[in-house]
Image (cartoon, rainbow, N blue to C red; front, side, top):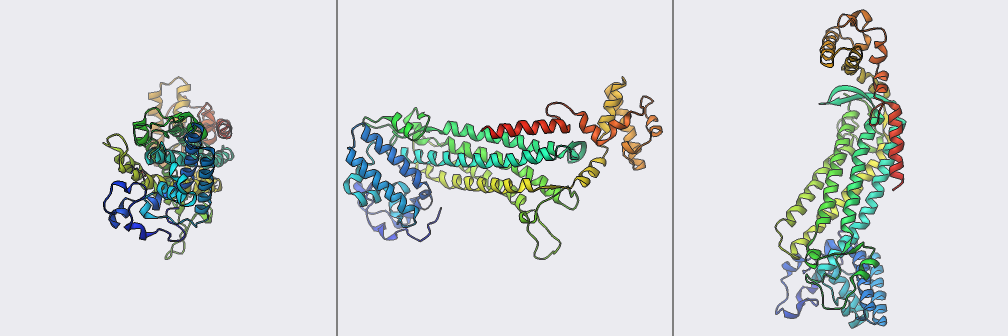
Amino acid sequence: MSSSKKSSTDQSQHTHLNQSWGGRFNEPVDAFVARFTASVNFDRRLFRHDIQGSIAHASMLCEVGVLTDIELEAIIGGLEAIASEIESGEFAWSIALEDVHMNIEAALTARIGDIGKKLHTGRSRNDQVATDIRLWLRDEIDAIGLLLSALQTGMIELASIESDTIMPGFTHLQTAQPVTFGHHLLAWNEMLERDFGRLQDCRKRLNHCPLGAAALAGTTYPIDRNHTSTSLNFDKPTENSLDSVSDRDFAIEFCAFASILLTHMSRMSEELILWTSAQFQFIDLPDRFCTGSSIMPQKKNPDVPELVRGKTGRVNGHLVSLLTLMKSQPLAYNKDNQEDKEPLFDTVDTVRDCLRAFADMIPAIEANKTTMYEAAKRGFSTATDLADYLVGTGIPFRDAHEIVGKAVAYGIAEQKDLSDMSLEELVQFSDQIKNDVFSVLTLEGSVAARDHIGGTAPVQVKAAAARALEKVSSR
Ligand code: ARG
């Protein structure tokens, strides 16, 4: 909601002294400076959480006897009416009132009179904004956690379905050993599982209430910080007032989470793009996730994964913005911090969109099993299995490696996979090779033999998928 439905920003107020802090000023703020320093065009997005924080603050002031019950009632009624007005798009935002906090406070006073001016007792916009962003980001983290879980669920279910679908596994993007498609999908899920953990870590450290720090040093009123903290569902009040108003670690940490998540999703995207290409043809993506070309009629481009890969750049950029914003900032609050919002908002929006796109797309992947299987047969993917077989006959691994290398060279010359060679051909390389070698050289034998926790054997993949699903559904 960075721009309002109607252009409601009131330019005419530039000529007035600011009613919130104009007391010591002799001339109004320059019109350009007012626009340059204002944040209302983007921080209005925090309005619900600003009002939530104000109601908690006012309730605490009443509890400790700074506000009367009647005053509290008027303030809460006024703030709730303002919330509805903003929701309905009727609220007139004013650049002259700088930010979401002063717009709402001025509207409250306009609505309920002088009682409205008491709301700011014992607080500052510095602890107010620190609280608002935490409350806002906490809700976003919870929504993103749900999206991430939805994506993981679809991915794990597909992995279970594809637990015995054989494909080539790669190192250096060269065929290495056969794996199952389900195993590959579960590798992706492990990345996302750690991302989910990072998101929860961020939420834990974010969940301390800065209200009461006021401008920087605390306040002389008999405030009850536990009261506000509890009523806003924070774990506890922050420990140090200077740190409370200047800390933006939680925003940086969230952006770091987002950067790592998008880095993971860019890796998945890259593989999806490769796999849909005419050269691989491992998978098909349904048409609804792709677009065509205006000039080449045959094209079906994997736009969704390409865009997700591209969006990693802007999310990484936002992380660097926030780190640079905070670098060398002296204590306590500095106006620099107003610049935290747009990168953070855009990071949240981008992460949400990317997760939503992936959560829809991943379960819709169609595996071309035959193509995957044929690809796994090329590239001597069971060479390690033959070496392991020879080790089983008592040959040291290094010697076995050498023997198989020779067999592979023969296969390249004859254009034959190891499993396509006859026993006579194979014994040229070692007389230890017997008829039972063929069960080892098949792709099925190769994957089934990796039968341990974390291995690619279909039974292990099924079991791992079940464990992963259990983890996600018990959140
Ligand atoms: N709009 C400001 C921000 O986003 C609110 C805090 C302003 N505090 C101040 N002392 N000027 O950071």
